[in-house]
Length: 272
Image (cartoon, rainbow, N blue to C red; front, top):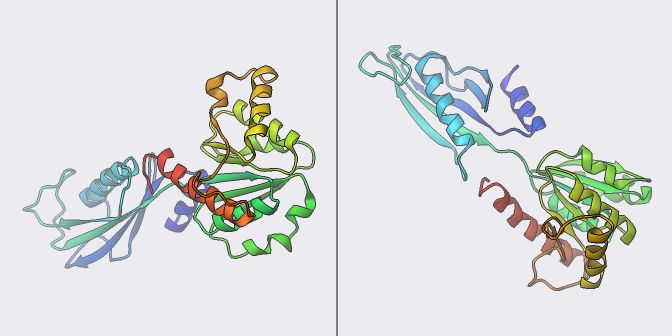
């Protein structure tokens, strides 16, 4: 597997990794500049020359995988018999600089309801490197012409038309996916809240709506759903930053997106 496929594999599996590249070579070295190695938590793909260089780079890469706010960094190696590395001696005679670039797991967001607010929110979130799931029970909300505004998305966009049970999508989402509930139907919203609380491994859960709506939902989740207060408190409502009070769809979307970006940072301890 080449390094491009390996990076794609990690991204597809939502696993963190590090891309290791031979940045510069002076004199004799096992590999030329540009050689690449991809390091995951348990596997590696490619090679930067083996021996001490590669073993030390792998050790450091796995430290970076578990380091909040990990940034790219350079490592220098002298390849002569006067230098004893952690994993042995390499005496090719040259010197090598290696670049380590963290490959963080992309955040994932599921927006239930792609109406006026949902579409505006999708337009903003699509500009970020994340997995974006758009779910709606109404087919006219998901037609290609309407979603053409997302054609140049940076995000990986997944469209789900769910005419009967939108909540079934929750079980298909990757662990850690953040859920935003903003459908056209309060009964659908309520069913999604109940199902989200029953779905293990989700990230944050947000619900659009008024205080009166939430009061009714909270009572229903407790009495009919059997959820305790701690579970119900996982649902954040209203969503968005409290200081942004406008009611226009675009304003609400900006507020919710900004709040969600803060949630991303808190969820992974500050990892990028």
